[in-house]
Amino acid sequence: MSKKLELKELYFGFRNPQTIKAYAKLIEEESKKLTHDVNIMEVCGGHTHTIMKYGLNQILPENVKFIHGPGCPVCIMPKERIDHAYILALQKDVILITLGDMIKVPGSHGSLQDARALGADVRFVYSPADTLKIALQNPDKTVIFFAIGFETTTPMTSALINMAIKQNIKNILFHINHVTVPEPMRVLLDDETNKIDAFIGPAHVSVISGSKIYDEFAKKYKKPLVVSGFEPVDVMKSLYMILKQFNEKRCEVEVEYSRSVTKEGNTEAQKLNEKFFERREHFRWRGIGDIAQSALKLKDEFSYLDAEALYRDILPSQMIDDHKLCICGDILKGKANPKDCKVFSKACTPSTPLGSCMVSSEGACAAYYKYGNLL
Image (cartoon, one colour):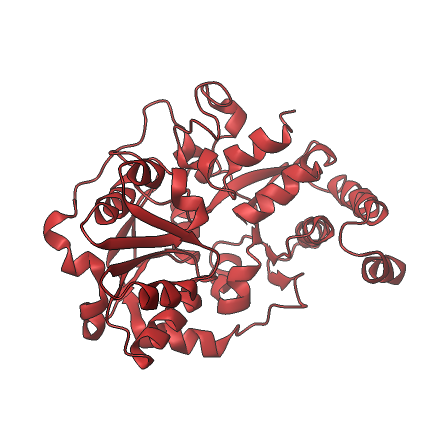
């Protein structure tokens, strides 16, 4: 890559059309040297939306393709966990708090929006720290924080738990649904029918965990991986770096998002997570199935804060299947595209979603619906 192009990035920013076109030209040049088609999975839903919003999928050579991955925390939440939130929200004197994307995700009883219509006190926050204020303002209520997200949001929940304990706030409980990135990636690659040739690694996850968590994918699975920022220039530069690896017969973990990601990550955040959480033996991912060691739970010493344990008798444990027409599972595995779904943009829309990929702001179906890049 030329020094002139690097200077363009810095001077014009990461959305500059000329810089994007310059990378598109470099990608085309590298694509001519490839000996086979290359399917590159962007693990994170944030990257999917960047790709669709800026039409990056439409300016690639025919032998270079994006396929979508399972890095959308709302999309992978199974119906039984949504049912937990729904049931908890309807309990007497409970305020259920979660992040905004959860409002329309359908469980078997309905969504949290439906629970609200029945009188449940469900509140959506941008920052988990708002939970403290709500708990202090409602001392006669039990405030349950329904925690979701990958490594990115786990430290926020850890910090919230830490503050609640230090401030001796007694009316906050936690329902933990935090999941981790490497385990589903491993499951996808262990499937002999997978179509994955390389990965664009998540940005914000990697800020916390560091790029070290991907080493096995280059060493063991022989899949190039580049950790990318979320801007269109970031994604195009990452694609170029991946194709260079193929053509130079290298297989490495590289970091394009070097302005924020290090090898070791945020070690203070990691320590805080380790203080409160341990691995679950199993966790079911919507559309993918049971994945061992892929989610977190509160350690036993903090069980007095665990809503899942304290409300165990009323929370269902059985698995609940998705709608028969929904193909979110295949989309999350990189085996299908939203446009392959028979109900996409017909029976399934953001206002009437049949599957989680249409609900979340990071979902692939939502991205295709919003930006209309269906070519």
